[in-house]
Amino acid sequence: MRIALDAMGGDHAPDVVIEGALQTARTTEHQIILVGPEDRVRVATPPPNLSLRHASEVVAMGEHPTAALREKKDSSIAVGIDLVQSGDADAFVSAGNTGAVMATATLALGRLPGVDRPALAIPFPTDRGVSLLLDVGANADAKPAYLVQFAQMGVAYARAVFGIPQPRVALLNIGEEAGKGSQLAKEAFDLLSTSGVDFAGNVEGKDLAKGLADVIVTDGFTGNVVIKVAEGVSEHFTSAIREAVMSRWHYRLAGAILSPALRAMARRMDYSEFGGAPLLGVRGVVIIAHGRSDARAISNAVLAAARAAEHPLSLD
Amino acid sequence: MRIALDAMGGDHAPDVVIEGALQTARTTEHQIILVGPEDRVRVATPPPNLSLRHASEVVAMGEHPTAALREKKDSSIAVGIDLVQSGDADAFVSAGNTGAVMATATLALGRLPGVDRPALAIPFPTDRGVSLLLDVGANADAKPAYLVQFAQMGVAYARAVFGIPQPRVALLNIGEEAGKGSQLAKEAFDLLSTSGVDFAGNVEGKDLAKGLADVIVTDGFTGNVVIKVAEGVSEHFTSAIREAVMSRWHYRLAGAILSPALRAMARRMDYSEFGGAPLLGVRGVVIIAHGRSDARAISNAVLAAARAAEHPLSLD
Image (cartoon, rainbow over all chains, first blue to last red):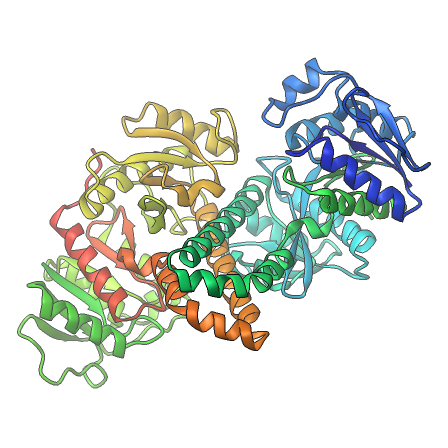
């Protein structure tokens, strides 16, 4: 597969992106196309399956998405997505400005037949493996029918990329029983029940990490709040542990003994293991990696993009 | 103050409730009225400010709220709320079935003037103290105007119970800037800006625990998902730490040394410190404590109820 990779995306770009590209190129047969300004993206002795495509502009992380779309026609994001649109690449990966990638991809690639709204999906670790949560912010408002499309797109992706033969779908809701929730959730529940997806019913926020379903659908407002609350609570916990450990010398000693175990735990709960967040429903494979991605996370996102490109997604 | 306390509410009722009632009665001058079946709620030598009011029925934790409301007219919840309605108690506290308490209170007490929908508010610990999040599930759907009322009710409660002279209000949203979010969030932002409350703008899910505002408003669907995700992530973290610590003998040793620090951390992040969740907007003080409350959490909820009853809430 030929993967266009935004060399300028992410908090540690271009260095970690180049490192991730090198790792992937050396260990796989995929063609990696690094996209960015040629004076800033340099690789001393690139392997034959790593190339560079020049793009003169860079979209900053905090930049307004539609302004970037309008004003930076030659950004690494715009050029990378153009490669997918023209058929010169099979997928695009970026750890950059999420809003700009979504807006550019939706405009340049268009939507798949049967898709009213593309959705951003986040793979997250569970007690049993991984689940895919969508939408986590492509659209702030949703209609019940969109949630059914999200379910179908999520199922196709979970099958292709996670290798789950028959992914189960659940609806994020504020109660387990049918008939619970907002008007949107109630109507989506009814539609999902007869949609043909393997529908497991409602799942509550506290059970997200239990792995009760492979695909969990919600509107983009709720989904975005969920991932940010989960991130906030995790950080709060991590810093509280650090503070507790540093407060006495014998705690520091015990903390030092425990640190490999705590690091292993943090790694198991690390989203970057699962290859980035796909933007589903556009005509082409687009994966958004976390802004804080290290080289390994970039490499995992490229591998997920390659798997997704091997199994083109369609709603059926 | 005279506080009616549901003796049969919570996972450890009636024992921990009775213990909490005794603690509060012995250390304050409040009149505590334990409500429950007289054959199950017994106190050997009650202090003079602790009394019992018989109620023959009990609403189970998992019971359907409206069915309980309809069929159990003499439940400890119904009788306790009747005491508030008749003026024989200044407040009602329960660690029981949240839905049943909300439904019964709303029906029996009615709404305050100017309130379209009562809201359930959760006090949660932040880096700077405590914030109040509402609505966390009294209503699954909201209109922009409701969120302004939530803000006003939250401000009045934070002033009365937390003693914050001029509480600041934020709107839970999926971006910090104005103009972000769902249709509901955008319209609520505009209304809040001109509502007269001290409005700090949007706050994102990852910043909830930073204490950027004293009162954070959202619709009941999003709010309920938020508290359940936070609870789920916390439990996931706690069990992951326990698992990591138990995996090797020298980790177990280090864990034993660290356990006072970890327990202190858990206590600092413990919601029960902050006195339960008030149901705001009904004509009377109603506080719902966590189902897993211990005696101290019950006592804290009774004290919060007494403070709230001293400063009757009105929208102004």
